[in-house]
Length: 399
Image 1: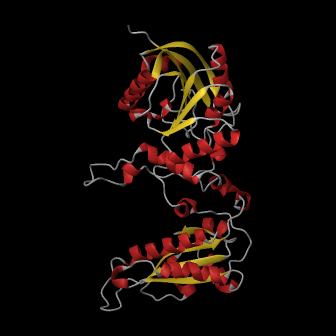
Image 2 (image 1 turned 90 degrees about the horizontal axis):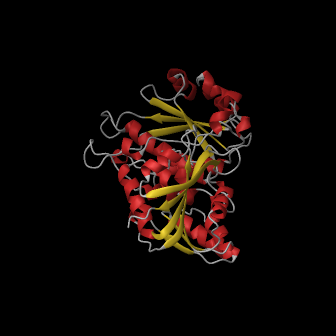
Image 3 (image 1 turned 180 degrees about the vertical axis):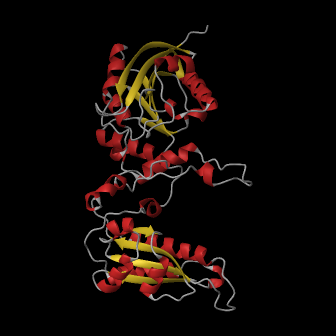
């Protein structure tokens, strides 16, 4: 769904994560009391000297159709195509002069922005959706709402209840169901100086995904043991022993392994994922050990007969992280231990997914301390899921 964040890098309040800009509004009126609450949230936004250099003109299609129509007609044609379904259009205006000394207020537009996001977040909390627009005839809009000549008409906010993507104009429906994405934190934030990009711990992004989404809605969710992992264990004639499920996520693989008779340890960098795995194991009536742990700086203790990596290694594009992965695997595996590694295949072309995609030759090159016993192409999830490579590797005897 469009409201899902794609490249999340840190947990945030769910209110912020849920806010998104729809173009599909239901033909449902918005209660006046709810609109008042949104305006009240805007009223309490911070501003320079407490000036509150913002004004909002509310045009309601259900109670004030003439003024609503007048605002709608000033919008760019592309915006009119979908905004005509919005029950409320709010014109956001900045007053560019301080009232106490009549000097220019260079922060007026900035402060209006703070008020607008406060309004939009309150709307989200009320179960509403908003969409801000900058495409309009400013002079015509100023005249339509009779704003002062010196004022700056900055935006129009469509407000209403979101509905199915099919309600949007046909040309815009695809955008309604695409996940949202943003520039990375290191592109927009810096540590001390512009030349030093901000670096967020990778674990924070995984924690954010599990906090914001139901586990079974995540693209890598598969209820039960993956068929290819089950096949790998069968080829190895392994049906018991101590197994580590690396990056266990919601714990579906770990629970299935425990049900098959393995002694299972499950680890993940996301505490919320681990809690979900614990609950899933309890519901299934099996025992698994669970740990919040980072592969690159692991505190786990071995030995393990088998490590199952269903989507960890392909998240590490940096050589330093790959080396840490190898060292941890070597430390944790028993002398004859096996690594079952499943990753995105280099022939998978979808934009969504991990940064690295490999075939078996890549795995041989990147994991030289391991011997490749078997390998085949497979899929993540359903038969139409992303193309994957599954490799069975054995720790080399360096004695």
